[in-house]
Structures are given as structure tokens and as C-alpha cells.
Image (cartoon, rainbow, N blue to C red; front, side, top):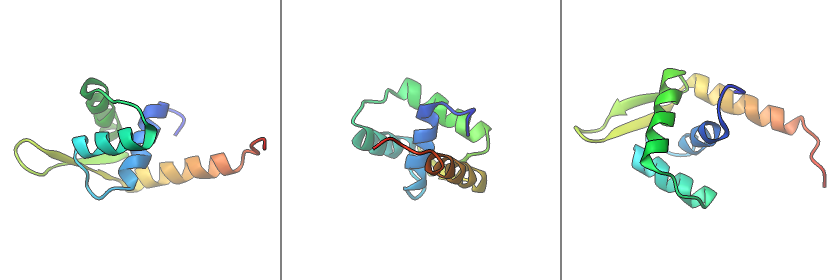
Length: 92
């Protein structure tokens, strides 16, 4: 979890709320939730890193479109992060 950048962690969390999203669907959802534009040149290398780390699986929907699915390891990583955040006492 701590080896991930904040962007990668947030991408993983957004992916976990969608069912087999394409990269463009992830991008749109991320932009909606975070209120910031994401360039493809930033998105896809980070998705590839999450795939390489075994946190996402990448499949092919058609010749031009891939989809991403959170792995069991990815779900565990998200849960670990949630538990870590909950253990912190945030100031009121």
C-alpha cells in the first residue's frame, strides 16, 4: 500500500467501485470524483503499474478497448489502507 503513489491508490479505489471499467471509464469517473483532469499519458502508465503489481487485472473487451478488474490482492490493499486511515485520529 505504501509503495503506491496517491494517484495509483486513488485509481485503485475508483476501479473497485466499477464493474470491469475501461481506461476511459476509469478516467471519467476519476475526474468526476476528484474534480481534476487526468491526461492519458499519466493514466495508462499508472494502470500498467497497478497491473504489474498484481493489484489490477487487465483484459481485452475488443481490439481497441481493455478493461480492468481489481484483484484479490488489490482489494486487500484497499482494505489495509482503510484500516490504516481508521486507526489515525484525525483532528476535528
